[in-house]
Length: 452
Image: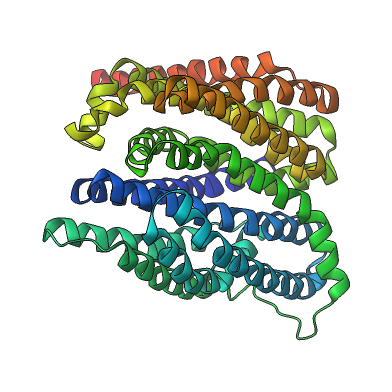
């Protein structure tokens, strides 16, 4: 039994870390080359486009993903065809809503941000969001069956195509048309869906008749997760929207560079969250609330232990990092990076809070916390940007993270009896165990050498 549990965590952890790392690295790689072949205003428009589309996709997926995974992991296999069909139907309906939103947002944002190209890009993204229906659905089914291998390969295929296109433009010094990048995204989504289908076939059992009661059940479960994801994305992206409308798209490019680096450091947080959700839902049903408390404290502790060295290095050598990542032209990002990197301390607490609450059937609480955080972030960004300019956006968001941290820990203490200090105990334990493993390894190697 213990072996089976360890096997799940090792195998899932391996593919999930690979998945999150590949998404971040391919995205980061695309940024690395794109920032060198475009000017700041052009890259700023691309950053705003990605922010808008990520907001829409993350919100849509939030309404479907966790609900489908929850019911696939807790209901008998004979119900799976009905759940998958209902989820597909919900995905199609939400995509239709997404298209309407894109048609409305296009002219509004392009006018507000003084970026005419943004409207055309958002209109053509409609084709991408349609192709993402099968892509996302196939991946959700695999995650619901706790199989992460196909998700990794399909993501590499989808994101790798865009990266490859940008890399070729960089190598051959080709002029980059932002609209062409949108078209390449569509092609990537089609290829990614094809790869994902190859892996999902063994789980893909589809009921020909849609049970709309089941669709409603998924919607009712997922509506708070949808609101949570939307609020969470607004929390993370409102600063860039406000910079674009209050300052300029060139300033968005500078700020986005710091955020890209910060997001790279957050890979362990996202990886652990993807593994914890299905396992937490399962443990809640079989072992009760105490096991979920342990999962939260342990997972946050491990993430913090992994994050601290990278966080300290970036705080001490920000200029070195910026020169490598974006070049001399972006050295004005250094003071912003020294603030945004501090987000990394608070993110594990917030992300795992959301993961745990969604998995134990308390998405409503998670939604209200994230909504409140988004409102606080808007207010604090408005104040700090007006007072300090571009760097004020990082001050505003850090303030919102700080306030959110105390709210989250208070709720976890009341609901799950979580002790925040235990996370630091597990972080320390991670270092101690790592040191012991290293010492045993070198000691064993030394004995073998002396005996030989």
